[in-house]
Image 1: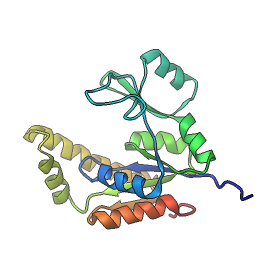
Image 2 (image 1 turned 45 degrees about the vertical axis):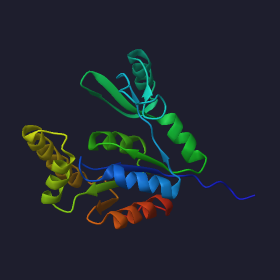
Image 3 (image 1 turned 90 degrees about the vertical axis):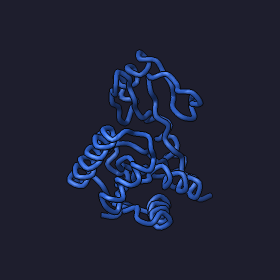
Image 4 (image 1 turned 60 degrees about the vertical axis):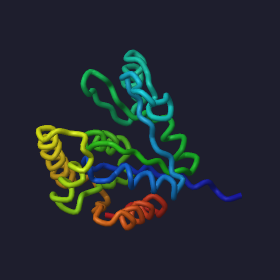
Amino acid sequence: MPENKPGKLVVVTGPAGVGKSTILRSVLETTGAQFSISATTRPPRPGERNHRDYHFIDVPTFEGMRDNGELLEWAKVFDNYYGTPAGPICEAIDAGRSVILDIDLQGARQVHAKCPQGVFVLILPPDHQTLVARLTGRGTEDEQQLKIRLAKAQQEIEAAQASGLYNHQIVNDDLQRAVRELVEIVTQGAPQQ
């Protein structure tokens, strides 16, 4: 009987508007990798379901998980906690499945401290103008919010590139190529530098 090969942890980071969600949707369908579902203490928004969109839990439960080391990463954002439960990820990897996390640089640093063997991927826009066009095209922010989001995106990109954390960088200038690159990273062997 063949030995069950362990899966891998793939941590994906990128600024808003870079196309991460679109890329990840295709990669998850293609590879069968498991998407990590975060835990949060905020209430569900209309249409969100527990254990599909988030694990919705109360503050004492979250703080207990945090204090017991049951989270790979966590943060408090606008009075609500968000974090990545370690248990389901470890179980999936031990069972031979790859798991994809979509988190920011702060979370990626925490995950790297606990799981340096993970594969860390930074998704980048081809250039600043493309990022501006993508964020503007969403039509979800006014001009002031857009300026703030663009400045934050630029800071995130610079900090992530300077971190030395990422094994791979994918420039999303061609969606199909970006998807193929991430599929290859998820399905192939050891991370490359």
